[in-house]
Image 1 (cartoon, rainbow, N blue to C red):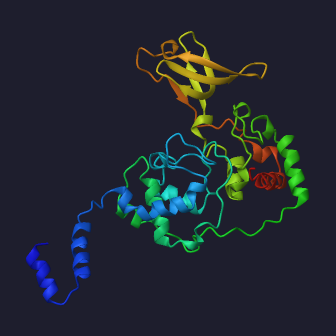
Image 2 (tube, rainbow, N blue to C red; image 1 turned 90 degrees about the vertical axis):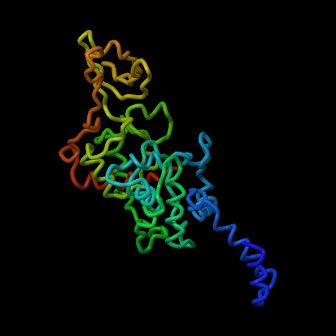
Image 3 (cartoon, rainbow, N blue to C red; image 1 turned 30 degrees about the vertical axis):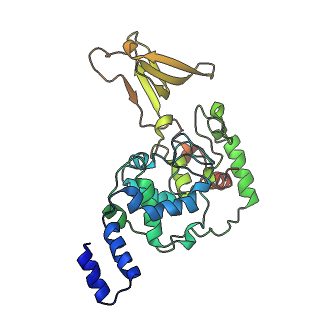
Length: 311
């Protein structure tokens, strides 16, 4: 703004303070608003007000919950039918719909009651730009449902008879405990994930996991089949892939679990460029629970699992 323009404002009766504000505004509009930190500054505020009590956005820094430094990239592949912002929004508003692999504990409810729909979108935008690029238009297009504030659910009245019946099935007839521990410890989750906090999932999701286990299988718990040049076939859970081969956990004839390394060079078809190994789309969970358990027993098992809320 040139000096003659300033004098023009003064002659029109504007105070020096008003002129200063006009000049400052001229400089403010020159700020690069394309920066995620500027576009989603309100979202960062909401995160620091609410989420930082459990989460962080610093790589390698873990508080009560995992770091979200790369959540924008991770979220883009978590649920194929959803975009990263859509998945993040669902995780915030309805954390019980989908359970991330190896997740422990549950999201508290009733946190967003003080914040507007735009604040919710801003929070999603801030998180979606952690490790990825997201447009403001993509965030604006999100639909925030009525009643989004995560109000605490009504207290559930469980029948003690159902809880005890469900636990007896879990430990006995259903043989769930043979793969799924009720504690969170790496040594206990070699065959299946811990169910310490499985109760945060909705009952419908638990029923589907029991009756239709192939619907969703966490990658780290899919069975991996490796064809070897010596004619042997190794089947187990893939736990690590290196530059030279795979580490898998296999079950021995005596039902012990051991970690085995198979080099790529030992795999059949390695030199010809064939697939080195195949990841099964079939769950290791029995798929005959509908035949093994009665409808009432499955319902009781779900009631028992709903009482597992972490700790």
